[in-house]
Image (cartoon, rainbow, N blue to C red):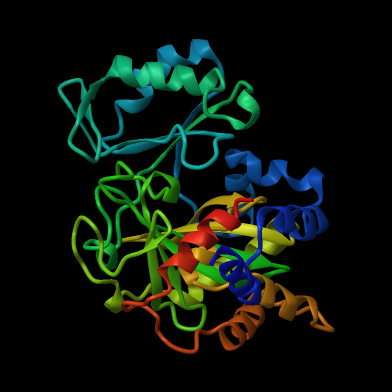
Length: 337
């Protein structure tokens, strides 16, 4: 049964971890460019210079003695997000939606004291959440306001969209939705829902939680078959433009939809994960091959988006009960090995 599933997954063009590392990351991402995306402050500065919308930076902290300035820094803001500059996988992110009478409230309604936030910031600075455990810096950003389109599709958190961009062409997309299990974070490994999105239309195709198909949000019970990401063309064009911005040929672009400002880039990843294939029930390999076979490169981001929408559009909507759940579970295992 497993061998049969492996063959089917191979026929689907599923890219595994080793193939990603050697055929995509090592081949198309020069190592000297990694700091541009591994350091979120550098990414923000690059995006701003390129005219790409990003969340507003409210403040930064670089040393342990900066922690004593935290209270004065936060007094001016009711809502904010604290992030490690060199964190990954959503680790170390603290979201505050309100402060009142020296208490700070998380999206869940839990109240914490300033001492809790100071300890959290101190842990970030010491490298608890950074790549390689090295000392890090802290960035404080404005809080994204959820687009009403997603109000019933996320639980105590802001959805984000991951777009895989290959040589400047958006080739696959996935919406990540926070759940009670994920503690309001859009992290698939912690229990968020991954929804495959049609590159051609922005419509939901297929959804999984823990690699298992789901057809409605586990907490809000909203069905996914009516879900369409707004501003789809603008969103893809922003993602495509990150190729020129970074020079990285294989890139994960994370985008949020702000209620007032529309699509905003929140993070870039030079080693994007592969679970996006499970959410789309489709492999990356055939799409990579199509782009690699192009004889000429289009230097206009919108033209690349038009190409992707035409060539990578889904044949049909898949977001309804299916029988092939075992193959999806096997895909979740295989892409990590």
